[in-house]
Length: 317
Image 1 (cartoon, rainbow, N blue to C red):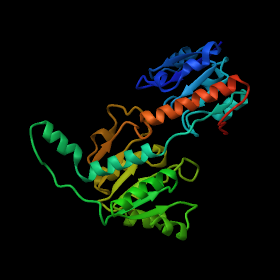
Image 2: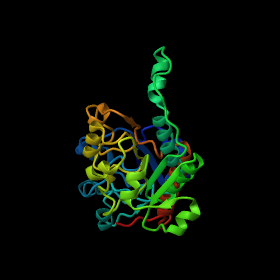
Image 3: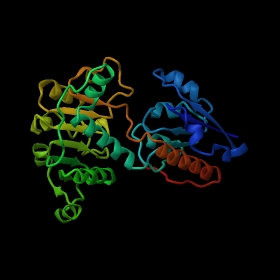
């Protein structure tokens, strides 16, 4: 019997999201919910695991950990990329890494939840109401404002479509985008400098690669309007987090709505928690029941295929 270990099930729902009983006597399934700051404790918790099921990038599966898990034979991750897994090191050991599909619309929805909450001053208004008060500020509308989307893939296009529905002008940046294809979608192709300078909302929706890593730093924040909202529901590694804190503190930009951070969970003393004009969520972009059911179901399919002698949705280094 193979030992399957599911990592980082923060909501304690993984066993409900797929029919793990289908594995029958071929594999046992164990859930490890706690976070490990001690690598030795993590290694001990995973000892004897033949299969790891990783939830996004919550636990780093690096070369050293892989070397310390002699029984490991398969790694499955939610999503079709995971920068926290050393795929090359796994492959050197003959360990395949397989992914699962992730729905795009939950991140689109969260992006707009953040934008709307910021522009209509919802956190302060809700806090005032619960404290016995009433209206405390003046919100802003979106119609006629400019939305800049950096990364015009599946999620970026979804964000753009909603922006158009709100009557916004939409600028988009993507290597594959042409002026004609942009016009067909009702958006305008723009370079990064133009997009930053003209947008009232700048939203990141890029994959991580050598070109996008650290794309937005101090110089880019300085090019933005001092009233602009910066939104990142993609990856923290796309930006210079320290430069963002400085830009917010100095009033270089109008605010930031963030769902991703360099260190997760966010430490209690992290400067972003005390930085003005921020709206922060704990990496919720993909966290919906629908997404979890789709992802864990495909993780189960990957394990079943592996047990049957084949592989599905294989990731490469």
